[in-house]
Length: 504
Image (cartoon, rainbow, N blue to C red; front, side):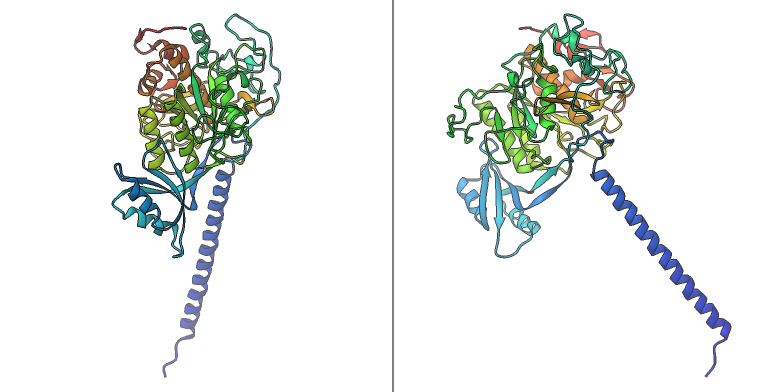
């Protein structure tokens, strides 16, 4: 037998060692890269106090809960038959969202959720099926203070309400004051509401729904402007108005299907205060609209999470109350994230048919949502008004999403002082805080011109905005919201009045 050369053995051994070394290095590098990715995911999925934002992440389906949309014209007998195809508990049919069903599925066949969805999709009577996505938001870590600091409580002019913390509200009146121990802002970089208040400070017949974590309706700065269901007798345990909800005096809690939308988080109360804290009442702050009525619509729990089904139930409640004569024209939505839901999109379009505007936060990922949509602000509907956040320097907030095709307007969203539960106040930051500014402005527009449709409101918001360098190419309007111009129909770019105003 021919023997191999020792040099050949040495060469082969060296190659084996080199191969093992390279493989080990590559494996170590791969593990290192995986650890970096995991670390970065954890950092982005857990907002730190230095990252001021309020954002929901990708929704996860709740196991075996489905939203089913049956085709229009499907007889109820067929719907009942299809719902009974498996061992199913029907949890909800939405009275104002035709042919929608929310079902909880149990089956002895041990099918996965995907397999159950596939079976329903195969039926010719089913238009679409979706999991009951669950939306979550991080803990309230962007609150920077829960007490007023260095606020001058002196009333300076007839335009300024006597609410003692007014000077901390730079979004309403930016005179270069320092906010939350930070540098002073750019004078005039605000929503120009003082001039608008000369026309109107609001109307207590206007109702805004706040879809959020609820509202502390006992807060003394909000309580005067809380909506009251006059057809319901408080605390008698009876559904007096026969709308399916017991004792819904101030709104609706979709989580437990009750009439108590009390805020157990902070976020919803903060948004509500910016929209409509009572004005000139010598208490705390003032909202954009001094006299509006705020309806609490709770679908986010104390930990900031909520399901698609509960969002649909909140919308269904709004549509039911609108049908009963409640003058609800605006929904303020400081939540979002996750993927596309046809059911939610359809529900928003149904709101549009009833003349209800859907104001939505653009999100806090510093992302161009033209390319990477953020829902619900990215839904294409004539009543969706998407809002980015700006700071007191007239810059787009570093966390704010943007999109020249997707985001309509910028509004104050950094260091915003407002109400929180327990008769307290706090500074929050996020597109969540920008959104209620816009909701308040649109309510003043409707007070002055109730005939405006949602699309007309959005068109006027866009055309009357104050153009800014920071928002050029970042939003559809290229500017921040201008309350006075939006009410009057004045367009800076055309220097003309486009509508006649009426005042009350």
